[in-house]
Amino acid sequence: MSENVGRWLRDEIENAILSYEFAPGERLDETVLANRFGVSRTPVREALMQLDAIGLIEIRPRRGAIVIDPGPHRIYEMFEVMAELEGLAGSLAARRLDKASREAITATHGRCEQSAGAGDSDAYYYDNEEFHKAIYAASRSDFLEEQCVQLHRRLRPYRRLQLRVRNRLSTSFSEHCAIVDAIFAGNGDEARRLLRTHVGIQGERFSDLVASMATR
Image (tube, rainbow, N blue to C red; front, side):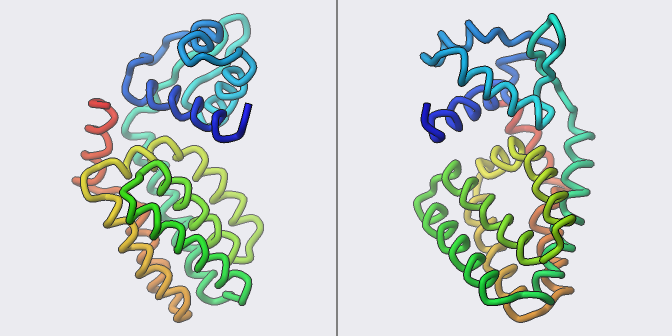
């Protein structure tokens, strides 16, 4: 089973959970999922373990995989903390930027430009993930990078879904451009502000995210 197919399978199960096709409290049967997606039980089990790690399901003894609904308030709180962590990473990256970090940010930013230009929200999500990871690494704080990656993983389904909201793809890339300019200019305060705004979801953006979860 290739990495791309494994990722596709995880994303498909993830989508079904976020759209409430698999309801909170529902048990996900490995055999049923394997038949539905035309794969063996092994990749299904691996996908469920990944979804358990980010809190979308909970694997319980004798019951198996149970769908968990964190609720809008919990999701909002996670985005709130993520915005602060990313803001700090951007600020430190602006202060500590070296040649290798600049090249990594430039390369991932370029890939985001290509996927955004193609209007491919799923491809953009994964390119966007690498862009943000490049900023975490550029902070040159191992602990901060670990915390950012961990919470980014928890928020992965919602960040990916958010990109499908109307006009969010082009807006996200425009925000990236400003973030890159601030980091490369060594403006830590501006990089922090821009990343906090970029990651944080407030008002209409949060309402759009919740609505998209209910209508997928």
